[in-house]
Image 1 (spheres, rainbow, N blue to C red):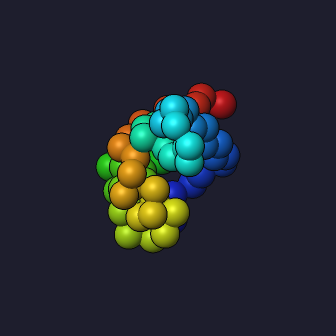
Image 2 (tube, one colour):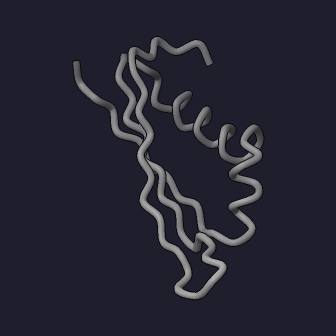
Image 3 (tube, one colour):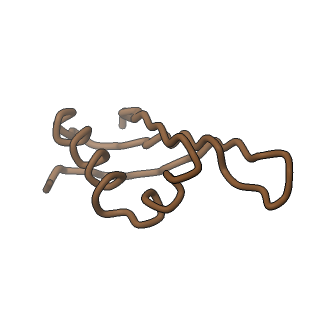
Length: 75
């Protein structure tokens, strides 16, 4: 979306089933974004990346609840 992102870090917190084969049941992604970005465009970009463009999300979403949030990091 051509936003002036100066840095991006994504962290994940996950939960797995107890029994084998262990599969993910919950995945929470936190996007740490540095730069003067438009919040609405950032939200849309994250949504599109997780629902349309990321095949890993499509596969993992069959067994796991995937949630996200973003944090704007000051300079």
